[in-house]
Image (tube, rainbow, N blue to C red; front, side, top):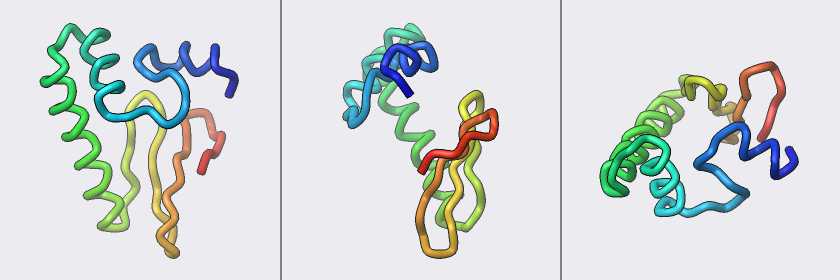
Length: 86
């Protein structure tokens, strides 16, 4: 996906390989939270996704798509709209 398109999809995400503090800062600005509050919420979302994947269940990411884990342990992201990333 081109960089400009990525920014349209999520104002808080700009490019590959972002670190947690960068994501939390973007979330904080977008949602009117402190960076600490945004980091806590991010931790909660990641924890929920990992818990579901470890149990072999798909993990929805509302508004974006869902994560799934194959039998060999590979994690795949299925964006809304039927396109597959992984």
